[in-house]
Length: 433
Image (cartoon, rainbow, N blue to C red; front, side, top):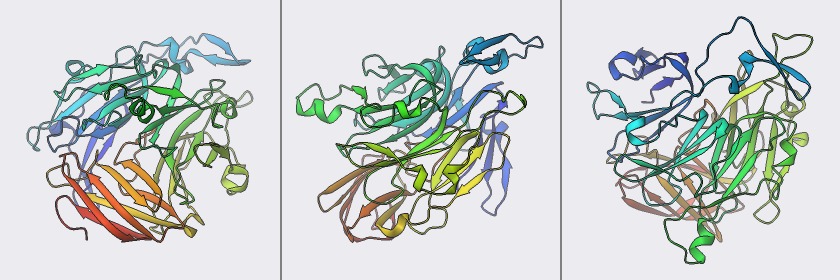
């Protein structure tokens, strides 16, 4: 049963799933609350691989209301102090280690582990084994402060490799997407930014370094957003929730971006300026991405003050849908119509030695000459959590040759000759259902 953690301005809250459609507040018992702050996105992972899920929580700023607002001019728009993150000191981040049973709860250990990120105004975080050593690493998107990549050392300690990996980017970073967009079998990073800063596409150079016989644990990324159609096109937008998702099931990961301004409307200063959303179709590693919102439905013709976005196949029809949260507006469920015209496969994993939800498991699917990789739970984006049922688009392929799963425990399982257009349920160490 899936429980619920809610990040807040004030104290965070944790609800335990009772399994009957109701939840019970277990914040005090689990010790996941009690700390006041401006808390933003949260991401789950079994960072020490003990079989229990741990939690990382982003702290934004140490906000203090100022009755007399100072105003700065940004891009010909008056911005009061309360809307300027640079006016406030950064808030610390939190790492809650799961102590293994309900009575013991969680222990906060971010500073001890080296991931408190005291200089960052954090908005999003993603766990992913970027260097493929079996331990989930951590990437943190910070607003008007350097982004940070923490390499997991495997001993409940982390090493800051941000500058060495070329990802210590100083921009207004909001949302994160993690996936292998060009199909070279390593995980890349997409970052949404504030206005006039472009979005970033950090291509992982691990496969190239391997071919050059560089040290196997070296990590290097290169921002190729401009080269592949994701940079300048975002200059007029403020991006938030995002994720790599194969919306048309052609076997290549596309991108959906939720936009919404932080500027007040001149005539109605109690409202923020709306913006249109963007949908980027992936044409492949050579040509990159094309914005196709104009031909992708009425939703892209309107403007909203978007923030969070969660991805998953809610109606179980074989294509990825999106739920979007609007600032001071109703949530919107965006149904994908037509993505299932191509073949697909979904994988629903259940851990036994590993954590029950298999967060951190690595999947590699081969269908014909095409190979795709995923990591369960790698995309949390901005204040959102995507479905943990992994989705693969297969294009014209009517079957999957192999699906290899590397569980967080280290166990490997390989499934062969799977028919397309189904959800494969796999229990760790057992035959699939």
